[in-house]
Image 1 (cartoon, rainbow over the protein chains, first blue to last red):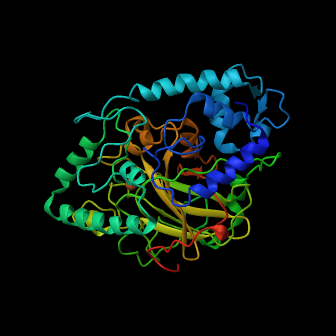
Image 2: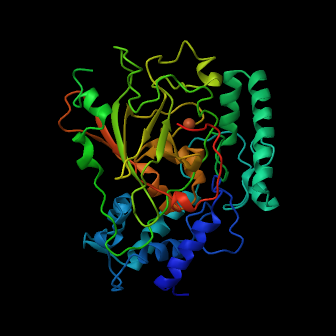
Amino acid sequence: MRLTSAFLLTLGLFLTLSQTDAHPPPGKKGGGGPPGSGGKAASVDDMVQRLMAFDANKDGKLTKEELGDERLNALFDRADAQKHGYVTKDELAALLTKEAAAVSTGGGPGGGGPSGGGPPGGRPRPQPGQVLSSGLQDELQLTAVQKKELAQIQKTVDDALGKILTAEQKSQLEGMQRGPGNGGPPPR
Amino acid sequence: MRESFFNRRAFLRGGAALGAAALWTPGVFAEQLLRTPSLTEGPFYPDKLPLDTDNDLLVINDSITPAVGEITHLTGKVLGPTGSPIKDAVVEIWQCDAKQVYLHTSDSGPKAKQQDKNFQGFGRFTTGSTGEYRFRTIKPVAYPGRPAPHIHVKVKKGDRELLTTQFMVRGHAGNARDGVFNGTRDLIDRELILVDFKPIKESKVGELSANFVIVLGRTPDDRDTQPTRTRGR
Ligand SMILES: [Fe+2]
């Protein structure tokens, strides 16, 4: 499907309105909605489309000026391997495919600890001591009030747990929470 | 801090020294800017705010002993989704000190001996009409459990919390092993939370500059009320 810029604008508005209570993105379920800057693993096509939307004159060549966002200059430079001063859809796709592959292979050494980890993009494993994971919260569609109360409960649990664990045990626990395939960030 | 490239008083006044580093090129063809992803607040937002909450985290009140660490001049802008600057936004940052200790009773309590008592750990800045903010702080360091050095950021306006996130050091090897960074599955989002820490050429003591642009998902005034835990400023 080819997105027109009018649709993109509507999409942007929709995303903005629907993300009032933006929680840590990992594991957030898309629910069939359009791709956005959410946390689930975006497909290369989605990402290319989001960037090519800035190709204002629709000549298939995206320049830094059209992009107009210094935050993306590094990405632009990596994609513009030939140093033309512009990037094409194919160049972006090539770069993002390469980088996405690097991400899904675990993203580096270290980690340690049990690496149970769900499927990529799936619901993150609950962290030890976490009452309800963010993915689960989304799935249960907790209301804002419920989330607030849940946060209170979580705080009680964290405080209580914090009191009985030594600093070493805490960092040990953190180490276990990491690991390849684990979509959820440690609670920090 | 006589040797510092930037005069402290001028800095606190919000002197123009850093203006050039924070230049922003708004998209010529008004598309929506990519919004800064929200990331976990973590457990160390200060439970008791320090007495000094200004934008110079290197010096507490009028202490003559500065914090340990690589001096970093952090600048940036708070923008709405179309690039319009957000005025009166309160930008808060917090991070652990060079000895890996956060200013929080559950961290600086047990680690009192390890802590750098001269690091402010938390700071605030209220944006003006340009949406710009500035801090003087240290380059973040990794700590056990978080291989990616990072600075936590919260943006508020009035009694509303608009964004909680954190940013990391571009090119740092620890990023690839970091749970929060890896939890950001979208490659474009990753770009939005990576910041260059560049040496300031004019500085004789190796100071760094860093620029973190914050794009909010919607303009604060349309947002549903979401009371923050700490009222006012
Ligand atoms: Fe942290």
